Amino acid sequence: MEANAMVRSANPAGRILTLGELLVDLIPLEDGGRIAAPGAVLKTASGSAGICACAAALLGARSGFLGKVGVDALSRMVYDTLVEAGVDCSRVVVSPEGQIGLAFLEYLPDGRRNYQYYRSGSVGSRYAAQDLDRAYLAGAYALHFPGMLLELSEPMREASMEAARLAREAGVLVSFDPNLRVELGRSAEAEARMMRALSLADVIAPTLEEGRAITGRRSVGDVLRALHALGPSVVALTRDKDGAVLSIGGQVALCGGIDVPVADPTGAGDTFDAALLVALQRGMALEQAALFANCAGTLAVTRRGAIGMALPTREQVEALMMQQPCTVERVRLEELE
Image (cartoon, rainbow, N blue to C red):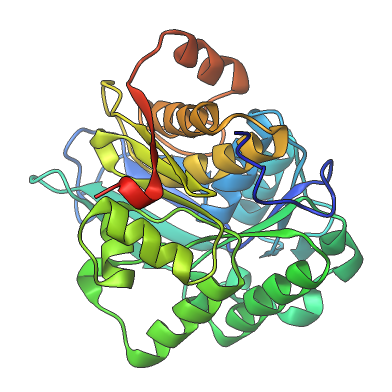
């Protein structure tokens, strides 16, 4: 079975568009470096949707980004980095309304990542529904957006939901990554917004823990079935070092983990999202699509930084696939526990 057999776009050769906020990540160069301590930092273009757009381009797709940047130097750096990666930025709004947001990242002694954001009123959060180019969106293969946009700002919330609605009307695939902070909990209002976005999506790729939080179920099979019941026809679950799962049309591909040295997991999920959409657009078989996305997400953790530094190319992903780096098993969804 081809992975796209159950999900079709009105524009099979269109661009993979992502909508979101661009950021600059600042990461201490010294191992164990902390935000509060002095020292040099690595500066890298970032932002979930930006990473996804760049990853899609590097994996061989035509991609484009929808968002807003400022006229400040760091906005220019990030904008130029996307263009250099092959992303169409012709619909990015350049505005003097504010500056691009910053994200400082540190690794805690227990291995967890900690982000400290400087993004209140950032120019990216000011993107609004009226900034959408409806014709450009209607000609896309897919629209992808992360769930954090629903809580970023009122303008971005409205823009993301309007973009998803317009995409569905035009027959464009809608891809949604819940992007939850499970440990922080959610308000009833945030829960309702999340469920609305899930109902508009054709493709979703939460982590297994996010899937459990959304559905209240525990086993992989129960989580998949509950997520499909919300509307999406393509459901992937990433499982960190334990690999990934892809469910389409009642069939599930189970990919094991791939043993690689982990330098920085930033952007791994966004790269997985991009690879899944690329695989769907190419019409890969179910197992190949799952393996392609699993390999792409895995390679993204092997280098520090994000856009322009750590994202894998199609050739690198295919080379890893040729090594048969993990088990891939197909099962029927109804039989999966």
